[in-house]
Amino acid sequence: MTNPADVFCSDAQAEPLPGTAKTGSTYVLLEWPGPWSRDVLDGDTLGAELSAKLKAHLAQYNATLLLIRHSSRERRDIPDHHVYLVFADEAVTEVLHVDGPGAVLDLDLSGPGNNGAQRRDTPLVLVCTHGKRDRCCAVKGRSLVRELERSDDVVWETSHIKGHRFAPTMLLMPWAYSFGRMSQAAAGAMIDHALAGRYFVPGNRGRGTLPPPAQVAEIAVAAELSRAGEEVAIGQLLVDAPDTADDTATVTVRSGERAYTVSLRRREVDGVVASCGQAPKREKVWVAEGVEPGVE
Image 1 (cartoon, rainbow, N blue to C red):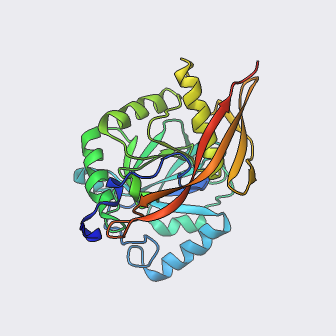
Image 2 (cartoon, rainbow, N blue to C red):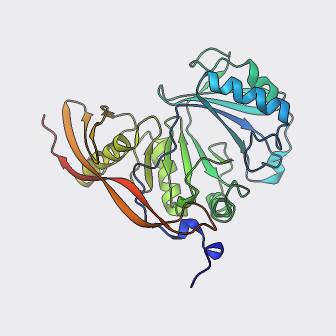
C-alpha cells in the first residue's frame, strides 16, 4: 500500500481542470527575491507588524498579495522592487517601483489609474514555485520556469496561487486565468497565444473573475469554437451569471451576436489529493454536459 507521504498530489489527476481557477480580481504583485514562508503574510517573510497592516489594507479592497521573483539568481540582486497592480475585471496591469513592501500600504487599490503607475500592455505569466506551501510547486514549477528560458519580464516565479494539486500551475495576467498540468510545450504555446491576445484552451482552469460554473462554461464554449476552426480572442466571450439549482446549472456565453447555452452538472470524483502527504478523498466538480449551438 502506498504511503500518502510519498505521493505527489499533482500526480493523482482525478479532477478535471475547468472550474478550479483561483478566484479574485485585484492583485498586488510585489517583487521579493528573498525566502518566502509558508504563508507570505504569516509574519515570517515581511515581519509580524507589517504583515498585519498589509492584511488589513488588502482586505479593504478584497485584494490578494502575491510575491514574485525572477528565476535566475543574478536578476534577484535588485535596487528596488517592482510592484504590478492587476485589475482583472478591467484587464489592466500597472507597474511602479518602490523601496520596500511598506509602500503597498499607500496604494489605492479601488481601480486602475489611482497611483501614478505606468500602464503595462504585455501579459504576465506567474508560475507557482512556492515549495514551502507544497513540494509539487518546488519540483514541477521551478522545473517549468527553467525550461521556458525566457530573458524578458513576461514569466515570473510566484508565491502560492492555489491549486498545487494541478502543478505546474500558472496565472495569466491581467485576465486572472489559471492554468494547470502545463508542459513546456503547452506553456510556451499559451504564452504565444497571450502575447497575440488569443484564448488558450489546453490546461485552462478558468478565469478567476468568474464563479466555478461560469469558468467551466466559458472554457466549454471556447473549446467548441476552437474545434470549429474559429480563432477566439481573449475578452471575446461574455459570460452571464449562472442559473444554478442544486447540482445543475445553465450559463449563457455570448460571442458577438451569438449566444450559447451551456448545461452543467455537479458530479463527484474520487481520488483527489488536495496536498502532498494527504490521503485521496472524494470531491464535487462542475462538468459541462452540453453546449447548444450559437445563433446569428
